[in-house]
Length: 635
Image (cartoon, rainbow, N blue to C red; front, side, top):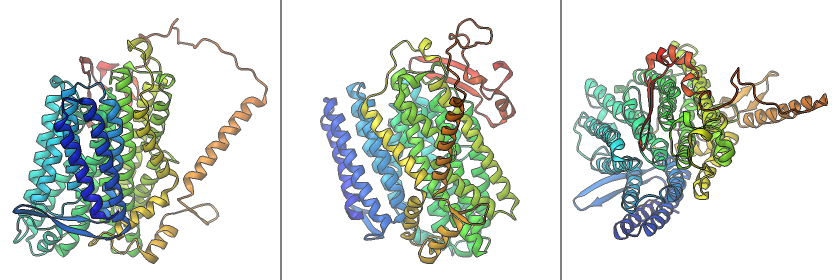
């Protein structure tokens, strides 16, 4: 399917979904089934068109959309195709999941949901394809912002959702204002100029105007991505208030439109600005802000008792890795050395890889969170526990996705973090800033692991739910399991077939014009890139391709498991079942189970200055718990 056909058929399917919800509002089953069908078709058409853009068939797709007297440029290149493909996957899994998750919703709320969802997806498509900072961008942004405001509002009762939804909309509109205002700083700017034209006009603009231009765009797109410190004001509230399948889209792709905007500005538009753009300055700004974001967001996540807020704060931290890598890439490119420029390309590729990874495993984690909410009715980790026996499929998927986001060996997160952090260390051998930021990024990976040990341990392996949840807990319906399994299969493929994704990313960048790294991912350069830069040195001096590393690590783990089992059985000892020793307690009950504020309490005290200390868990029926994390009051 051509790029244009996929684009138009996708928007047509979304329109049919919207019309059906308008006409059949009093028939909730029709609205739900038709909405699921048409939005799923839209995502399939979008994916086919995106693949054509990535592979370069009929590429690039540049055209204008005319709405009466208004017209705006559209550009669908390889970079757009990559993010559109991510949107199509997450849109498909979220809408299938929603068909079961929203089944108990009242008719009026269900109709509003299926009215807002296709508009939200259409707005995201627009943001990834419009090629201006004028009318097209404004229309796409407002479709996205206003529809997602209503989706956040509908996630919980009004008494709980009003404030987070309003804060979310306020920040989205502030983002929009900063972004469209920036273009007026370019010399001879005309409302509706394409990004390429804006870049050319930057070359003739004053240095002060250019400084403000890039500052506004960094603030606007950075805030959309969750950049510290403003991301903390809206992301945890919005993500924990929206319905989990909507939160999966917010974290999985809405944040990535901010990353997409930063890439467009700093790696495409900036190239046209010539000497007026200072990559060293903006590289340092991105590195510092990204490092602060990844560290503080992750530490704040570790303090949360509401698992949906934990996922929200964690999302901020993971996007911080991407922004840190984009800055490192700019700094490495500015070095002038060809070898270091190869490393700049590696780091940039790691940032793109992590954008895909985070979109997949964070969406999966939000769908896991939705399953917990669906089965238990609570968002408090302290009320959960022992759910692995009651929800085995969800538990296994939670374990694998937690392992992935922590960046452990033989996981998708490991591959992208390896590319970003190792590339950063190698490129920054003579840079104190790059070395220090790389150490912080590596150190923060341990906090991410702590976060998800807490999430998985308290929800699935500890005890507690049998006393605190006053209903039978069972596995979620099949339609809520299928999307999660699909996302996990993609996640596993990202872990064990990294060169497949390297090729995918390389093709997308190869079919993107006016790219700062043009030519780095083609022909001889691409061969060297795979064979030299992506290789690991082993003891005898030979090269071990990174593509085989995860498989070898997995093989080692399997061998060690068999060896451990063999040693255990070799002495012929028998297993004896005895009561658990409870440190002097006679019985295990809700009064002596482990609570989350005691986990990593010393670390919380050390890093109290990072914020996020006020921990409040509110279920739909009202406030359940409140405490200050890591303070003396909690001891």
